[in-house]
Image 1 (cartoon, rainbow, N blue to C red):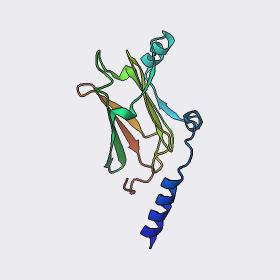
Image 2 (image 1 turned 90 degrees about the vertical axis):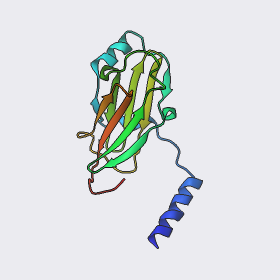
Image 3 (image 1 turned 60 degrees about the vertical axis):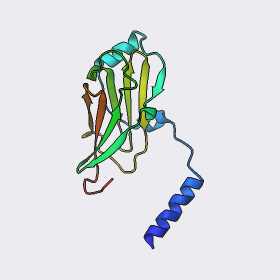
Image 4 (image 1 turned 30 degrees about the vertical axis):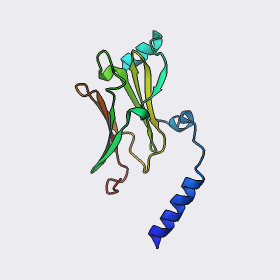
Length: 148
C-alpha cells in the first residue's frame, strides 16, 4: 500500500540522511525579509556578541487553516532587559525561514531552511508577544488545503 511505501522511504531516509545544506545558499534565493531597523543599528555598533541557537529553547507548530503558526519561546534567552520588535528580524523563502533575535547576550537564531511544504514568503509574517517573551511566526501555506 502507499502507506507502507512511504514508511519504507522514511525509514531509508532516516538510515541515510542527507547532508545539511548551507543556510547562506538557502536564503540567498531572493528571500522576503521583514526586518527591524534597530537590529541593524546594534550590528553597526558592535553589540552583536556571540551567536546562540534558539532550537534549544524549544518551539512548536500549530496548523491554523491558511497559515501554520510557529511559536518560539524566548524567556530563557531574554533573562534581562526589554523584549521588543526592534530586536527581531525574520527572512522567509518558499522553503523555510531564518529568525534572528538580537539580545544583550548575543544573537539568537532559529533557521529552518527546509520545511515540510512550501510557504508563501510574501504573506508570511511574525508578531511579538512581549509579556510572554515569545515570537510567533505566521507561515502562509502555499496550498491552504494541505494539513501540516
